Image (cartoon, rainbow, N blue to C red):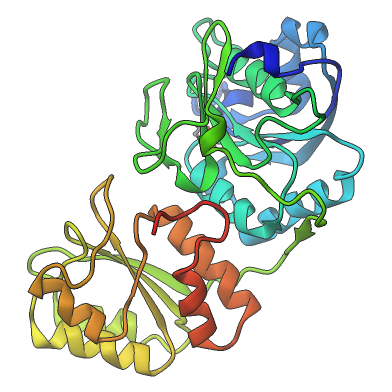
Length: 350
Ligand code: ASP
């Protein structure tokens, strides 16, 4: 499908500026990049005046480095979107790249039955620098957030990341490069659109929400989760301290290959003790691509037996934010485990 099907007539978009490199400038004392307000950003983007879309702006005061994003900030973004949901055709969130995939994943769960585009973008070089990628990322994200088809439906009614010419499903995205312009990728899911001279949408891979249902915003997230990676030589006492933390309700375990763990009895025992206490243990792979298949090898059969649930082909960002979301909504670990195994909004392939 090309541009002809993406009706780019004037729509109204809300731009939420949270911070990140895109709007940063150098502190003259320290030389370090720090977030500046939206006026600085716009002063470096004369193209803004020529946009066909009607854009309103909401900015975080002060704007933040995305390393400082928090559950409170996610709830704030959800509130802004929910409050403006009927007034805007789409939303663009300017966000630092470091935690953009976490925010995109969290929002995909918190905005239940989303029927409008929510596009996160940012840049690797500040918008004031000559070779910046910020202009292209910002202008194209606004076009994508306002791209509707002839039936009046948005082309991408889901939470996405747009970066380096690719539109990606938010809860499938991972930051793959700390300094390249193609900073994000979805290793287990096709790109939703390639933005070259024309937009090449892949409609088959884009979510099709139920437009008769309202969008339901959720604000609460339970942070009592931990991500831990297995590695050869991992020590029992250290793992015990982490797994026995009394507040802990969810564990994302990054295992080897297709979901394998060392076959030491203490590992199975500690994990089983945790699951018996009601902790949800989710098994995802350390590989950037591929799916967990517990039981394929003896080294993962023992995990299945210990009550661990498969995270399938989840990214770590998606698994951890999905756990936070489900733990805030349900007290019963069986419901949480069942829903971790359910594809809620395109985050896993079963
Ligand atoms: N540290 C920055 C941030 O995540 C990096 C970036 O925006 O690319 O806010």
